[in-house]
Length: 633
Ligand code: BES
Ligand code: ZN
Picture 1 (cartoon, rainbow, N blue to C red):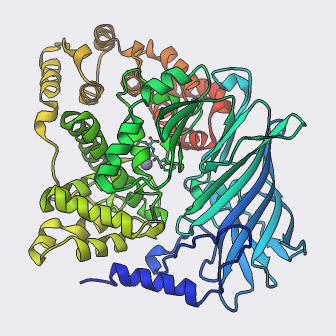
Picture 2 (tube, rainbow, N blue to C red; picture 1 turned 120 degrees about the vertical axis):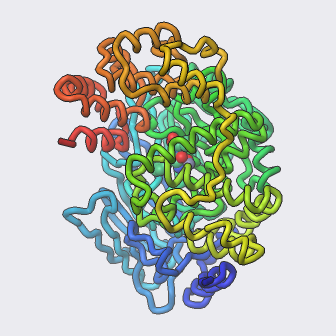
Picture 3 (tube, helix red, strand yellow; picture 1 turned 180 degrees about the vertical axis):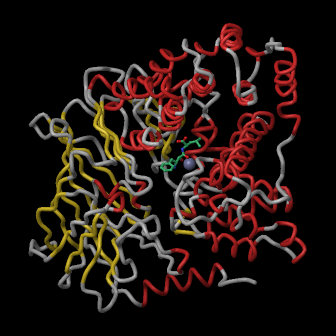
């Protein structure tokens, strides 16, 4: 049974905004902003926004903000251009903790507004309703709260340089409403521009194109201007400011970092221009102009964030050998899957993350070869099986299309999502699959998407026959829990040598002599597959032979610490403490506290003591994760 076809759904959405809505605002100075359609079906209903986009939507955001590093607050104004349906008299925006002082139209006339103070608002925050009284552009004067969860203000001690403060933002999924009053829903795309002032000598970067040189304001501050002229979901508006330098990689690629970090950062991402070329060869033109990156201080709570034209990266991926630069391939791939075609609701985040993880693996294959790509795919597959083993094959959260939540880590949205596309690719053949995926990006560029739309598009534009549809098991992959039987398993040869070494260790206690010649993925595979219970003698021997506690690769150090703490290996405690003080990435921090927390009085005492020292340096995302873990009985 086919639902509404992709092209028809799109037409309807476009019709909804051209017929039912008044003309987009006409500006005499700037070209008219490009207005993206919204999706209107029930599966595209975002329950995490207060906005009612069919009645009135934001199409453009103009920010004018001062960064106050003393008060740790951002404040100024936001001018929003609106598209308003006939008969609608108000607009509803998302806010969380914002202190709004005044709302006017562009002529300076005060408008009526109400900011609901909700008791249990939580992350969704509070609706800000503005009575438009004919206005099609409104100006909001406001200040973000000191504890805005999207923003992290770092003291000089939390930076590599130790002299200047630092600021960065993280918008995904619904954090940007803590510093920008707009409709914070991934299906409501907006163009934006910003003027940002910051104290000298800090530089400011954003996920938009910088306009000229910064303007010296003569009061110890400078103003930076940015424009994003392509409509983006508002979670992709991002800012960072600090004592940072830039180094070019290729004609359209480069990297920012604190001066003392820049050489190592540059060396790690030096293949980025090649990756962009490879990505374009796979799925078509890179549409965003430049692809720059910033390597942030270690408090950044994620590995990476795909902010357009300015990917944000953790410094913890730097290993000295580019072995973790699949991260860059991943964030780059989001320039298509996620930033061009965007999940309309967060429950469909596999459309961003799963498609990206597949694309990432194709970039890795193109740039580094099949062997590395197959090893990385095999790690993903093992991750899926491990998670399904833990939660059960029929756990509803293991369907790709969910009703929210990232509870299952990366195994489902990322890895099952990637293996879905890999399976389809193997069944229909790479050429046909690649042509289909490229048309998916092209035909839905700058638009939101849902699981249903993805399914319909495959049925319409890829699947050749009923027999093929049956072989693909599309609906089973997308809407049902577990792993369908047609999954394209990884090549068992990918890790043949390592799996042999694991068996040798398990059976005879033999340590792998080839360890230092192994790839990072091989080392990870070995550590992942060691017996769960190891004696302190075994751990000491492993560490001595393999140099685990002194590895320069944080992914491997993390696995070592995790297995050592799980076995209450005391020498690992100060190592873990040093790691937890140096690294703020939630993926590393949360599980280590969880391991300690699960190790009875011994572990809980260590966890409590360490967290008291490290808590202040963590981002709210990381703190939230740790505190959930440490509140378990
Ligand atoms: N978009 C995500 C980061 C994210 C996910 C932020 C969910 C907020 C909520 C980013 O692209 C990502 O997937 N990062 C991974 C990279 C890894 C899979 C290579 C990370 O941070 O570990
Ligand atoms: Zn991602």
